Length: 191
Length: 191
DNA sequence: TTTCAACTACCTACTACTAGGTAGGTGTTC
DNA sequence: GAACACCTACCTAGTAGTAGGTAGTTGAAA
Image 1 (cartoon, rainbow over the protein chains, first blue to last red):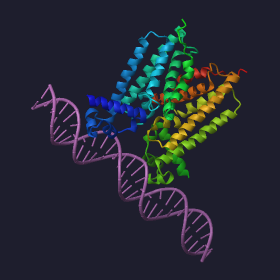
Image 2: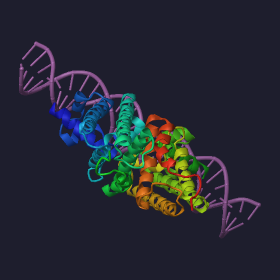
Image 3: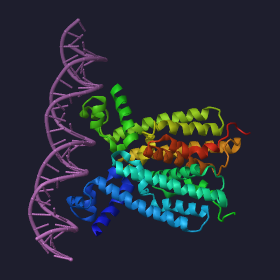
Image 4: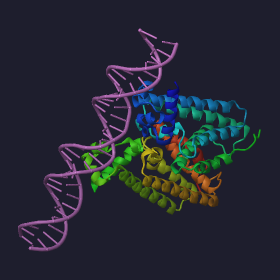
């Protein structure tokens, strides 16, 4: 069981740095110190590994979003927490979040993984839409349009900003891209 | 010479759909009908092909940006044209623009290609910064912050929106992500 | 005006290597 | 003794890249 987790950890890092096509069972084998064939004991196919990766990631991610929603901060505060998740995921500009990495190298993904990916996006937008709906009430975010449009834009923004930051290996590019949105967030709820 | 262009066209489509690791010389060979080995005559290594791709793409792209700048539209109108380029590049949600595709599958790119990629981003941000500076003067874009921050955000937004749209193979997701920005663009210059 | 060398754009046939995946065996633990 | 977690040894298919050869073209000297 420990090996399985090591495999997932190692694979996740690899995907987020180099994409799903950017690592092999041989790479994992070297990194965690078991034979290549033994990896197939834990994940029969690479597609299975991919599915396990996104499943675990979604679980963690949505748990984090749930925590943020249950905190009784303003919409602005919740958005700030959301952005921080994506910023932390950058890890010095070395990697992007798993869902960006998979969206990117879409070529060789199984349909099951692609479904999970779309679920991921849909749920993210739904969560953000709720936040922007609350923002319309508590007035903690300025310059709002339709909640679902603000939500989709916010998702595209953090994902695109991650891409830029990783390409230049420089987190400050992420900050520069997010600055305008963050400037719209007040420090305290208005209503 | 015709073959060289066919190769570039075919490779560009492949990269934009499936990433740089997502196609092989064998694929190109089948598609344009010459032997795999003959491709090496035109592009000695795959890295060379990658460099030729981004070089050609950058040339076209920045020529288009130059045309937009030389048109005497408002900042808002120029932004609309810029967004339209990215929207057109989606081609029914099948592909993303080359620079997004390369940013994504960053794993196996040569340093020369990575340099070009960063140049691409830098020049895009510079171009957009100029547009937002003009917007601050002609008042055709509402809700502006610092030009360079708006510029970086706009770049991240269109790139992220492309990623989302391709993942769901649905251009309307791109439109949804861009709606809020487009809503800030007035139809006529204010000053 | 023929001849010859060089060049272009391809070819067949290969190399060396990596990919994911499989068959079947081994030692340890419950 | 059976399930578990690993192993060695292998397979097939595909990867980029190379060696060496060949029609057809071009351009200039004999």
